[in-house]
Every structure is written in C-alpha cells, then in structure tokens.
Length: 415
Image (tube, rainbow, N blue to C red; front, side):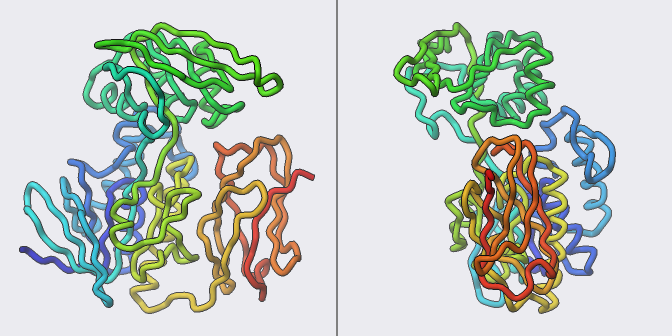
C-alpha cells in the first residue's frame, strides 16, 4: 500500500479546508487536502445565488465565485490535493496520525501526518431524522439535494412544491424553484418563528408571496407512486387544545429541517462530540481531545455565513502551525453555556491571548444582554438586539477581560 507523509492533512476541500490549508502552507509546512468530490469548493459549488464574500472580500459573490478565488490560491500555493478521495479512518500513532484513504486514481493508501484538520462540513437532516409519517412515494427530497439537481445536474425535481422547514437552504430553494417555473405552495415551520436568516425570509418568501405557516408540522404524506398531498396541523400556542388541520396538494416535498456536522470520521478517531451542536469539543486552539487533531468550519458547528467559516478556519490553520512549532497554550479555562445559550465554541479559552467565540442563543427576543461571568463576577457584558436561534453571535474576549479567573459561564439575560 502506497505511503505519503506531510506535516498536515486537511480532510475536506471546501471553504474551511482551503482556508486552513493555505494558512498552514503560508507558514512553510507541507500540506495535503483530501476531497471526495471531483473539484475543490464543497457545497459552495451548488450555491449559485449571491450573498457570499461581503466580510471576506468586501463585495458580493456567488458561491462558485467565492470558491474559485480560494481554489486559485490553493492551486498556486503548492498544497498537495487528492481529489475524488475519501478518508475512511484516522489512527492515532502518538507522534503522528495515520490516515487511511481510498480513491479511484490511487486505490487504497496511507498518509502519515503530524497534524490533521477536520473540515468535512455538514449534512442535512432527512425524513427519517424527523419521523414524518405516511407512505413512501417519490418526490421527497432534502433541499440541498434539490439544489444540486437544479443548479448542477440541470433537473427540476417537481412542479408543485411544499417546503418543510424554514432553514436557509429551504428558503433559497423556494425562490429558486419559483424562478424555475414551479409553484411553491407553502413553507411549513414547526417553530413559532422562522429558522432562517431574516434577510432570506424577506428576499425568498416575502418578495414572491410564498405563504409561511408557523407552529405547523406535517403529519402525513399521501401518494402511491408520487407525492400527492400533505396533511398539516397548526397549533396555536395560546389555545393548543384547538389545533387546525388542513391539506395541501403537491407533487414534491423539500425538507429543510436542519444541518448536522459530519463527524463519523471524527468518532472513529476517538474524538469527543458535543451533543448540543454535534461537533467536536475543542479548546482555544481548535484542538480536539485527541492531540494533533483540529476541527473547523461546519464540521465543528454550523455557521450562518461562509465568511465566518473562512475566518475561523484561517485561525485554525495558524494554530496548527503553532502546534507544529511546539507552541501551544498551557493554561486554558473551561467555558460553560448558561441560561438561554445553546452552546459556545470553543469550549476552552486561553487567558494569555485574545479569544474569538461563537455562541447560539435559544430564545427569540428583540433585546437582551449577554453576560460572561467568572467567580460569580461579570467580566464582560454586551447588549444584544434582535436575537434568534438562526443567527450566531460572535464575540471577542480580550486577555484583559479574562484575567486570572476560574471557569467561565455565558448567559443571556432578559432583564
């Protein structure tokens, strides 16, 4: 079996993987990217809508344009690229990691590496994950699959569409299907608020007069060969004992019911997973519990914007370089998600440097206060406007904020 050796191997060649690899390479270490698709770019290649790059490039780009800018840098940087290659296992050999991979070109082979970056992205929840009852006819797709069919393969999956879930991909596909000549009859959302970004609600639903049914869920899918009808129930929170039942005739159902970080490979490597966001536990250096294995991008936690993925992954690449130079933090403090906070990433911070953290709120409020407490004392406070679980909150804690404290707790106060 063929053997390769690099200082760092990046698993996944999307936005996160390319940004991390470029940063490690910039610090003069040998790097390889393993990508299972035919091209670099990941999910960006099927996201032909605009809205990317406003933070990173200060201009609005489509997904393929954003990916192309990084691909050009990667191809000219000297990073080794293994396309149409799948990493199937990672074994910890102490001072190095052993990555087992297979590809059409190379067959089975092994890569030895001092450091590994996990940037596999995320996958969609499907019908089985949410347990929609009914028959199993053709015409039920995840929104991302429908996006690939329309934007890359050139197929329109149906004519009369109902989108289940108001995640960003579903909202964007509601607009895309309308542009393709389909009739999008409704978007069904189980929560009392939309789960997508407000910008996408306005641009994808309101601009096209697509109905959004909140507090609603699909209770049956009817159809023999093809989807024919959905049965839906709407519950008013103020009078839950009086639900409203109705049906919508359609031939296609698109599911936009959440994203899950892709971490089957991480689990094989013995990495601990945070059940709150299904991503690895990481410290301030984006290092997992397995020394030398790092995580970033949507494999770590699902991001709202690819610009934030790039920023986080570039920092991860810098941390990998410092690790390879034997420069890692010794002292770190644990972080706890408190009231109204679903999770905070990373789960540890370094008191000797400034730290960037990402958190996801659990509530919908127009005004609230984020408090960071340590030793029963608030060390950082920030007023928040218009907070939603669909919008990630990014904060920076300076080393002056942290000081000499014990473990730190984040909470969102409604007072």
